Image (cartoon, rainbow, N blue to C red; front, side, top):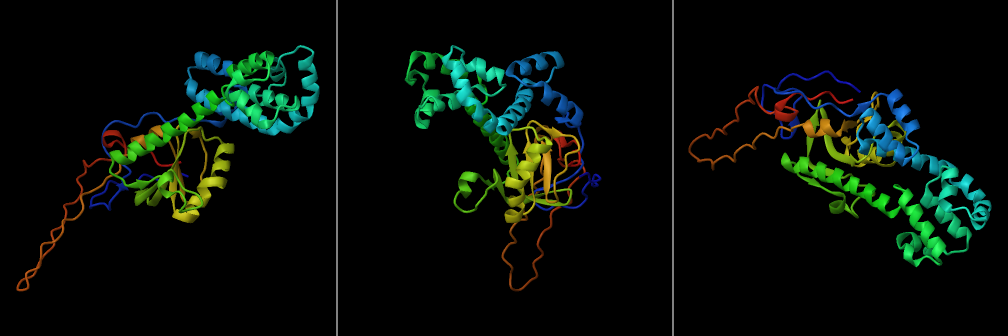
Length: 326
């Protein structure tokens, strides 16, 4: 949704108001992508090697391309999981005749670790032992499986323990960037850890005091170390963001790797990409001074704060103008 820019404030703002305009340089370029470009990249990023190739050819960031590649791989694996599972007995027969699990996984265009786990299960290895083998390949039941599990792990940057840790690390970095922004601007907040056990669902940051953006009072901010395509947005809105608005009121979600152009959010939820979010500077005027004790024999007038000057910090780096939310 697009709202017209608001005029410069000429009166003192409530605490944590984010004005729409300011002075100074423009915001950095936002990470937004039209749907045609996104779909072309999505369709082209079938393998991890495609990430490096397209990054080199088209000068997209490798991390962004890897996030899009992850979308494609995980969704395809979910869609075809049981299709592949039904073929596993036959595939194990191929393995017994000398083919490797990695070759079979590549033939089926299926994540190597998921293929290996299903095949080891079909070989009669208990599920707990299968998981242990992929965490510690040296515990594999025989040298051939040991060697093949190591090859599967090296070829899978999404479902391997290394890939899962990279995904968690992206999430941690996103939350750290969110917390850094809040602390930089003196905005109090509580994290999921602080709120654990108090609510059924909790955002990454529940603000102690709301901030106001284009007239919308935001009480929470969610961090997503992801790219917000239409599928991701629908999933997040249904599972997390919608319930947050019911419990806490209006809020915002930051997609650190951007989102598709034209993406719309329901009323009460703003979408920000990472660079736009970090360019916003909330104005936090000083609190009114406590009035002195009133003398019983004379009137007391509480001093007022002067109006915010036109040169006050705006909603972007150095007070530059912030673009309206999508």
